[in-house]
Image (cartoon, rainbow, N blue to C red):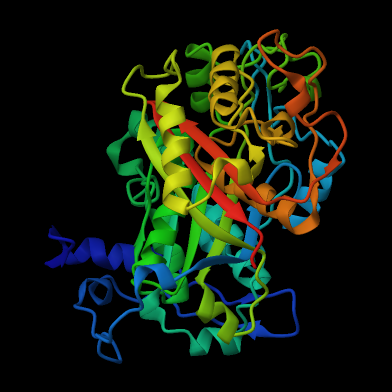
Length: 479
């Protein structure tokens, strides 16, 4: 009998899992080096054994909180508009839509048949083939985007060897977790419990993407996931930054991932009456703030950031893309899916984010809005933004969802990448399909149908989730 996390598991089960969990393959980076990260332990008992670090946990004093600044040094994405941060953002700047007809399953009987579906995705060189066949897509997106973020951040083999892995952590969440894996298990159970995949439980949980990535990298710092519906990524990013600020980590991978474009996912949101039914013109379906919007469009993918303590990043010569200044969370405490009519929860969240980050509202001149293309949500967020920033000259607001749809728990991660890219490039992407602004909206603050130049002083990114979860995070150019 083996005990794992307080649960007894028969040795026969351990043996079965041992024989089916493949060792992570090493992966080739798009550089001249070949990295082999730490491998998965070969036995179930090895996983359960008490961890004996090669070195004692450091007890040296940490720097005061105010001296530990957090910067962004790497980014990774998996989206319907590309799997590279630059390709992804260039498509956004060009106003390209990633919305199309769903083709991974027959949805002819559904009233909604469109989504921001990823048509081409490969884990070659990033995830072991055997594992790739067994994992849910949300986990594959985490592993791939996470490793690509490391490559983008210049985490080479030599750098990996020098990292204190006890101070490296992962906080990548998911709103829905492994829906396909769990759905497959239900279908198998209809035949017999003996047909159920032994991985259906661990590979359906939202934490397992972060866990498997940590096992692969050998990172022993903070490792967990947060699930707050469509606010998931922002919750993960802010908490990851706080681990760095408190001295519990020097480097964190953070963000979110979701893959729910399957019959049960589509059917569930159809039942909520939340989705656009503009099936005849998919690229026009997601239209935040437009008076003819009729619901959001489902998307899928992942967005992952490398957050790093400033001095740690400078010491290894990392390229610094932006500085993370802070953020906040609040609850509407009002309704399962509807926004609070007075916008008090969102306003409080924004004001707390400004206070926590030490940013004056006058300095915020770019907002990547949550704006999902729903009739109530878009307007209530806009009103909250105008309450907080309506007097700011030169304020520009856009919604990445107009082009890629709503990625649920991954939305904030991907939109954080878009926000950072706007800071880096000096260009903000357009709002496509904003043909007739809602009569309650002043279109002068909204980015038009073409990209615009903007010297960003401070950028705010909002994400809100079912249950009334509000989140706002703030980035700025590193100075």
